[in-house]
Length: 617
Image 1 (cartoon, rainbow, N blue to C red):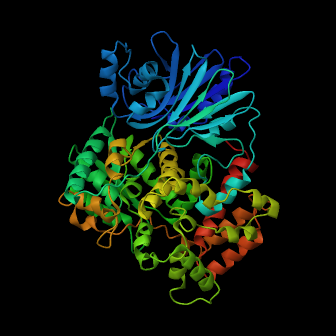
Image 2 (image 1 turned 135 degrees about the horizontal axis):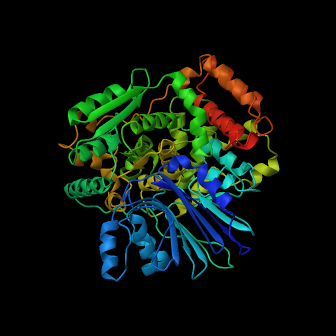
């Protein structure tokens, strides 16, 4: 697990090594064990290393036998030993035992199609000296990030945006359309970022920069669901086999490893399967209150016999961590649980270098409660579309009454009501918040425009699978995996996610809707597959997430501190602060719950102050 950074110059000159060094230095936290660069032709490659596999020989940048192919690679390839044996049989010669070198020889053998052979998480760049061509790829699910910027002079890339921002002359401009969508999603959906001109390479994509040609982006993999009606017993057996296989593959390392353990089923599955293979340490954090994660996690750890560590997060600890987390995230992600992840990673790093976690289970197996909505709306789903529209128009004009929200949602097409797990500000509410003209608002790409391209591809699927596909392409890379990578690497720790494995997805994508949502619960098939394996007390426990008490905190003096920080952040020319002040006032007076809306704007203000106003790196 590492950090990569690089620069390709279109004028034919070699990049300045000081520029590459600065790009590397700012991501020191991603790889404190080693840092090296290679500069040749018109490209510079920089690398920070966190030693996990082949600690003695795994230095990068790394080349093939004749130095015609160079690579920098961030991630882990879990099938690299099998790939290595096959490549050896084809005559390739190896000088290390790393997964990095396997990618080099795969590229020699298969070219850009090398990505189809990889099982793991990755963001890598390959310089082909013979073709004078740069090739970058991001893993299937988007576990590892890749950012890039290009104009007529340069193509720059890195694991984190802050590497790009160190380049002299790099523009640092707010992308207002991204901010507009952030207000709804609480993150910026791929491929955009909050910075004008800087892009994310989407999951399952690669990009080629040929000699004297425009960059060429290609989608090489699609997380499309393909439900097949078959016996539940068959599905259960497949899930058990593939999850055990995935966890086993994710254990390969030469350093200490552990597992995050919350109150939910996903981390319990990961921890229990891992514990069946070796003694492990587990880690959890929680907040004071009736749903304290640490109490439940401690009981689970006792049942599965792990060496368990936990920590209570106070309000002071939480808000002390916020500025550091925002710096590491590069762009605002207003998920309150991000700070809990930052703190549990800090705790775990005191004991291990690699940690497994349960991200991805909800998206693959149907775990979010909102996925139950199509079932609850079934009573009106038979209505013709025209009649639904008429009923919707009529009900919208009526005063509030019990059941109005149900009727409104039941008569709204899925494509116009579901954007994922966060929908903070509606488009109707944004003009009051934003200082933009009507012409600007008209030109913006809207949140439902972003989602529509995925809805267009899933017309043949059931509504739950369509919702999963939306989350796989928006919520998971934009929120879940974004904060998972950045906030564990903030502590120089590698996070691995065995649910997000190609073979696991091949099983999950074939599960029919009736085995995802059933018996009043979510992830039905996954839960059934773990009967007799994980503690019964966890099997049907509802999803809690990290229950951050933000609503209560914003009714204390903490709200006054947050308001002062926002007013001094320099966002008053972007955001109508009088409207925000009114939200604070109404929330404190308990005239509504504005905590999520306030948090989205507060996180943006801190990010803006850090990266735009003060330009601190």
